[in-house]
Image (tube, rainbow, N blue to C red; front, side):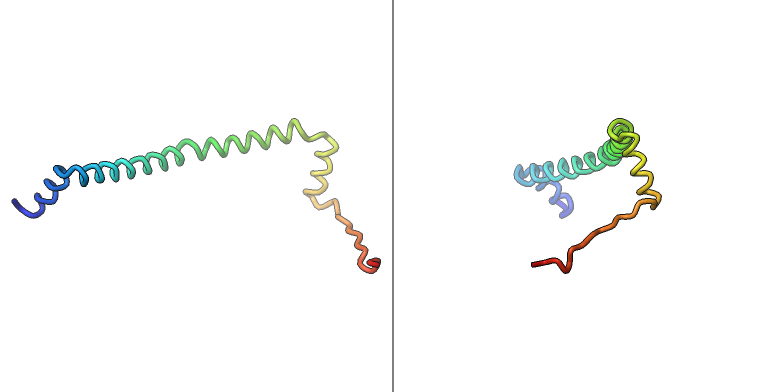
Length: 90
């Protein structure tokens, strides 16, 4: 028998090598299928859910006065003054 065919016959007929090959092929197939499903289905779903959650948070949980404060802070109209007591340590 030719050497290249000997490799294939040994691989198919030896149970330990055969099942190791089947396991390796199945693992690679599952990894690619998982990556494909995540790439195609899950990533856009997560992006939509994040946007939906942010919109619901903005609409339902923020009161008009809180919206006004966030608007002022976002446009730089609020300043934060920190009062430190550096010299008063006793």
